Length: 110
Image 1 (cartoon, rainbow, N blue to C red):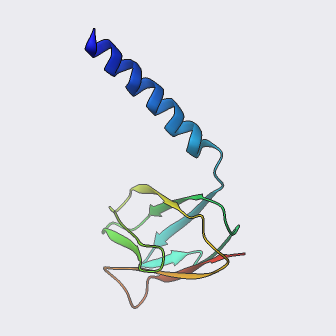
Image 2: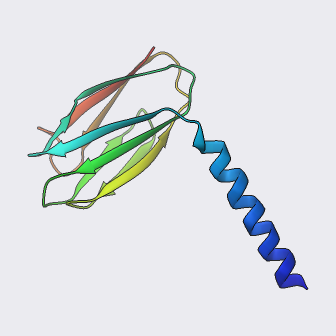
């Protein structure tokens, strides 16, 4: 009986979790030749967003931002989802940990 109760809680929890993030605006950037494309993304301020990062290179790259408090390794040929925000209006730089001189960009919340 306890296992059925846990299963029901799990299903209900997954449902509410997916509903909470289902209506978030989505944005996408790609990593190509150790560069972020586009390198600047404008997002709505005070809104939680989904950021998809697609690594089109063969080598891994890490999306990192101190201002966003995010870091995520994206393997070559893979795509990862990062939840960000809600962000107050402003600029939030990010970079590629493995290629910090070339892989740079920023998110502008307005």
